[in-house]
Every structure is written in structure tokens, then in C-alpha cells.
Image 1: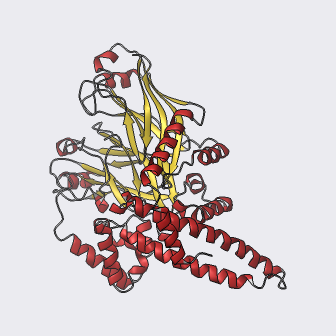
Image 2 (image 1 turned 135 degrees about the horizontal axis):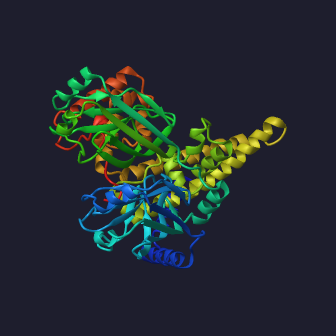
Image 3 (image 1 turned 180 degrees about the horizontal axis):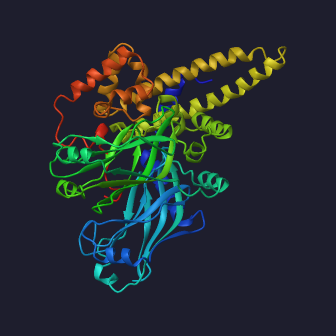
Length: 526
């Protein structure tokens, strides 16, 4: 076995290799892969509009008016098309976007050959698109003028896709494994949908709402969808700006065993026609509202009754391992043992999974050190050697299990296992020290504070797994959020809440977006 010192000496030897040569070889390899490989059969999806009323609305749409297609599945992910007939970035032009509302935490990049078309106008755009987060991509903004669709009796927008490459969080090409896994799993089921109306007819309640000052909130009854609890919240005279109605969809609780839930949703007011379409990935309980409020307080006050409707489509549910467990969650089942074993092996095998599984959290590196090739080489070397040790530990553990059945065999393996465990622990300590150097300064301040307060350091991995990596993230938590993570020691809870109060004494304008202080309601294609 290698000792820790030997590990570091080996790393220093590796660093003698010119890094520019390594980078050039890697770049050339990726170029060949992009050129030669399109791994799966081409996929296409139509967003066809034939309804006369909808066509009229499209042809007379105002600037940034959005029309959303249904969610569909391709290459193990959920997607949807949306169109802005009178432009999103510039009025007078039809803009078409392909949106990926949820990006798997275990991947770094997803590359496709993309075609976007409008059949009736013979408009077509082709290019390679790389997704590395929940985002959208569209055709050039001036490719199709709105007056070109005036005489169309139907409109058919088509997206064509071919998978080129899939990269994991460390940049390794995992396309073959990814394709095999999703071909074996088969086509994903159609997304689960749910509609909830909130009808306000009580005259006394309506009168109170119409006279509400800015900042006063009213909430609907709680409803269940996809195994989660939700409600709607409304500020009839605005949350922070008067004369605008703010409406929010709120996730009331996220189970501690889950990393996130992603939902596409539409908020509507039936009486006024106000509408907002979006998607959001909830990593904690909070609210997400419509942007650039489509409903004024004056319109609200003029109504004798009001009906707000939310339509939900479940995109994905991820567990703390970063695995998509949507189908199992909807069935009320746990992740199959085979998948649990694969996750366990992923954590034990390979540099990428090793670092995240052993150093607490599965989040991409965000510090300045992530661009340091020397640091990357050192971490990679240490983790590769630790991986070999862990494979040997697995073999010894298997021998120990056999020993329980046949006590007269393999007695020396317990000592071997203990010695190897000590060496792995030593390498883990070294890796953590190196990773500390790779932290963003704000993350280092946050961790230093946790370490300085008695008992809080134990919650670091738990907080990081839920995306709380610095004081900015901590400042938006509520007591419900903290307890929902499993922090139930009242002294620890109060210490954290006092810190949050301190952080929020002088909040900057624009920090808070709605109930739960959400700050993530940005359109995918911006």
C-alpha cells in the first residue's frame, strides 16, 4: 500500500508532465468525438397549433407574450418548446426556444445536434447546443418576422435532436454508459399533471383583499400534488411595489431525503386573462411568483369574484445522491436495491464520484481553485489511488463476510482491512485540506463560522447537500427550512436564526423575490 507521503510524491512526479500537452490531447479527443459520434437515433417533436382562437392570439401577441408547448422526454430528460410570436429579445420577430427545465446533478454537460423549424414558413436553424444547467436555447432573434405568419392557417414548430456527448461532473465522457442506462430503462412516462383552482367568492374576503395595503398577504388552502404540499399566496396591492398583484406558488415542505423537485407551472387569473408560464427547481420550501406582474391592482379591484388556477407538470425529483427518482417517487416506492448499489459503486469508483461522495455534498466546485490545473492534477491523483484502496477494501470486506460463514478461514483479513481503512482515512484528510484551498472565499468564511460555534460544524455536510454553501444562502432560510433539514437541537436552531437575523438587518434592494425569499425565478432562455 502507498502511504500518504508516497501519494504526494507521485503527484509531484505527475506535475512534471507539460499540462498544455495534456489539455491539447483532451481537446483533440473531444473534437474527434464530436465529429464522429452521434450516439442515438434522431429524435423530433412537434408543437402544432391549429386552434383558430390561439392562432389569432399568436398573430396579435404583444411583446414578450409567451405560448408554451407540452413537456416531452428525450435522451432521459424532460424538455419543452415555447414561442414568443412578437419577440422576447426584440419586438417584431418570432422567437422559438428549446428549454431544459431540469439538469441532472451528476452531469456537467450534455451536447446535442439541434434543429429548430417552422414548417409553414420554411424557417430552419441548425447548430450544436451544449447544456450545462437548467436553461434554454433558441434560434437567432431575427430569423422570422411576425408578418410572415399572418397568412398561416396552422403553425408547426419542430425540434430535432441527436445526442453527441454526455460528460459527468469531472468532465469525463460517459456517453456510452448514459445511453445504455436509458435505453434499458425505456421511454419515460408522460409527465404527471395537476390543476388546482383557488376561487374567491366570499364578499367579505374580497372586500378585505381590495383594501389591502402593500405587503399584506392572503393564502389559499393547502393542496397536495405529486406527494408534496403546496399553496398559493397573493399580495393584492403588491409585495414590494404598489398597484401590482403579486401571485406565488409555494412549496411548503421538501422531505430531507430529497435534493430537489422540478416543476413546470402556469399561473392564471380566469377573470382577467392574466397568465404566467415558468418552471422552477425547488431545493427548499419557498415561493416562486409570476414576473412583471400581468395583473394590476385596479383590474383586481374591478372584479366581483376571482379565480386563480395553477397547472403543474412534474419534471423531475432528485434524491441526495443526485439520482432521478421521479417514477419511484410517484409510485411511493424507494429506489431499487440495484440502483442503490450502482450509486454506492459510483461513490467508490472514479475520481469524480470519490471527491463528491467523500468530501460531502455532490456540488460542483465553485472556488477559484477549480481553474488551477496543478490543484486539479493533485486531487485527481490522490482520489485515483484512494479508489484503488477502496476497491481492495471491498474485496477484503467480502472476505470478512465469508469468514462469518466459515470462521476457520481468512482470519488475517481483519488486520488488513483495519490498516487499509486507516490509510484511506489519511488520504481523505489530505483531500479535505486540499479542497479547503479550492473554496470560494465566501464559502470559507461560512465554514469557519460553523467551525467556530460549538456543535454547528456537524451540520456542514447537511447544509452543503441542500445548497447552503455561504452566508447569502443561509440568510434566506426560515425556521421551517432549518428544522426541515433535520436540525432539531433548539440551541443550534436559535444560534442559526440569530445569525440569519444579523445577516438580514440591512438587506439590499432586490434581494427578496417573494414568500420564502426565493431568488430564482429567471426565464430559462435569458
